Length: 186
Image (spheres, rainbow, N blue to C red):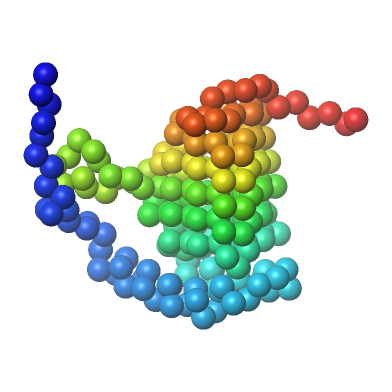
């Protein structure tokens, strides 16, 4: 059976507004001048201030490393979390990161993709919610529309495309349930 369909990538139309594009241009320049060079814990409040000036909602004791790449600060909300170095926040849509959450280094959190069923591969976006007390381990990927439940652990190099239940551990590509996370005092 031949399912050949004509895909017209040359007809791709970027549907983001001019003000969005201009905002990202100004943010990119600001990022390289006033955010990225200010490494170390001593500058964490400075980096948070710069993000707030671009519309990010940063509360509590949030630490965002200087090498974190943020596509659109105005689509970011972080409450008392740590986002480690070289993380990519491709937040065409909203990203929420809850209290006491740790996003390890080299994680990619991606709120957008392309509609593979549409002729022009139009952009589609969905928000990502990462609740409180979550650990997203090194080199993980979280895709559009995912909600990561409270206390969950995303294993190293996992690729998450579906919601993760509260207090569960997932891993693999695609990520699958491994076990429940039980916290002990011992």
